[in-house]
Amino acid sequence: MKTHVFFSTQSFSRLLSAGRPAFLFALGALLVFGLVFTVPTSVAFAATASPALSNASLTKVFQHDLSWLNVQQTNLAKANDVIALIQNLIIQANNQSINTTALTGAPNNYQSQLATAKTLHDSASAVLSTHNGFDAGGNVTEPVAAAATVQAATSDLQNAHKDLVAAMQSLLKTVKDFAKANPAFFTKIDGLTVSYLDEQAWLTGQQANLNEANTVMTNVQNLITVAQANNLTTALLSDALATFQARLTSAQASDTAAAGILSTHAGFDAGGNVTNPATAAITVNTARTGLQAAHNSLVHSGDLLLALTLWRDTNHIPASSPVVPAYKLARQSTQTLYDSVKVELNSHVQGLLDRLNNLLTVLSGEL
Image (cartoon, rainbow, N blue to C red; front, side):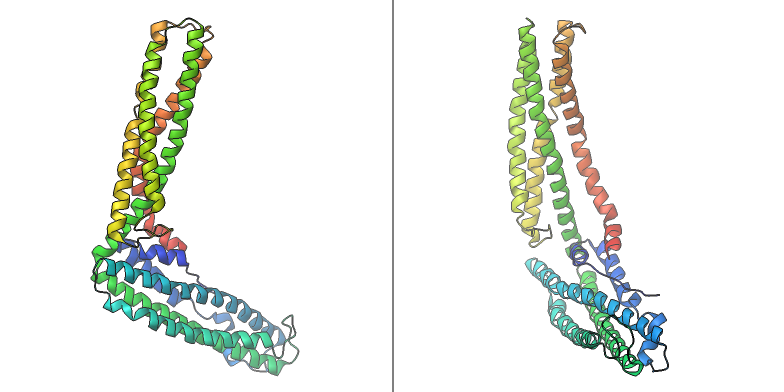
């Protein structure tokens, strides 16, 4: 059976930002890459192909090699992207005054091995492109030449594969050893990354609540207008709305400050990966303070909800009153806001726990 394994640059990037347990688990998963990406046994005979093979068998091997070539081309490209990630890891460690001597030679050694693999891969590509013994559709036209073509191509593909796997395994061992020697480094990076992602999600939810709060303002003000038109006193509602508006203004200011901090993402790159741990810590702590302050202001929407109920009960408004539709709309929107804000912080905390608990699964699934 044909077995090809892809690894993603995004997965490796997250791997570098993962905590030590997740990091080492993912390293093990990636290490399997070098063990399962094997030459398909069903067509291994291509390495010793002879004119005695049937045309159908030669065509099957040729098509397999073309498929293998495409898979390997993808893996080579992604393997090359890993170089920048390792260099970023070195920068992050240096920023924390961690000795990176064990890592400094890794990118060059890795690149050298990849270059050898690419040379062999390109050789296989040239052989398959020329397709001696085959027509443009991959059908055999000359069995002896076709056998030589698949034998040469399979050999080059297999040797390129071995070099690619060796490069990956060597790099993984180097980074794994570094991780073992510096466990606190990866734990810290993981915490910052998870906090940053979680605060981005918290910000999104909070901004939705701020929009809903503006709707509440409109609905309560409309209720006041309708109530006054029907000769009902509205002092209780007006005072509660004024207080709510002041708190909303404060919440918007705190949320805007947090949004600006997360948008600037000092200490993180655009993808949320840590580039400077000390600065990243300031970013997440300051943003969290703003988000928390906005939350604390918005949660007082419960006070407005209580005021609406008291106003209705005080005025003994009958179900037939023309004020009722406006009251129901104002109360419903306020209730919706209060329910959403009430669980906002809990969702924030749960989101953090979920990310931590699922980090290993996510990484494993992407590899």
